[in-house]
Amino acid sequence: MDETQTMQPSVPTTKLKEIIEVPVVQLAKVAGVVYAVLFFIIGIFYGLGAGVVAAAVPNFGVSGVFLAILIIIVMPILGFIIGFVESAILALIYNFIAPRIGGIQVKVK
Picture (cartoon, rainbow, N blue to C red):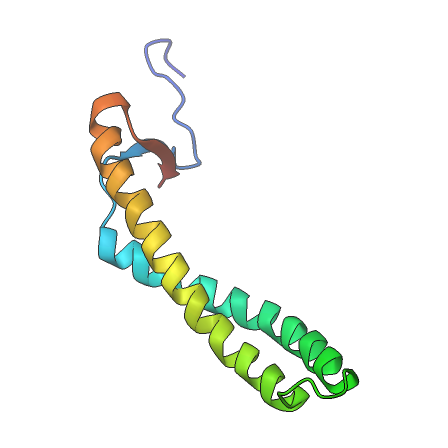
């Protein structure tokens, strides 16, 4: 091999790319759905716990089954709203700050 030739790596090199802007609505939708799924899972446990407590307390005023179902339904809705709003605010702040101080760097092929 000639001394002027250099060996090229056989593995493709990766480059760092910088995220300078995040689509606000898309991030908020995805995060809202993720939060809804997580809140649904948490809601199952909270609903079962609250249902058992409500059923054990005499004259509670609400059926334990009704309370459990209500919590299991309401938790994902709250999760979506919280996740959507929180992520939209986060994306807006990121889009404001990233061009000024630099964005997140990720490796891509």
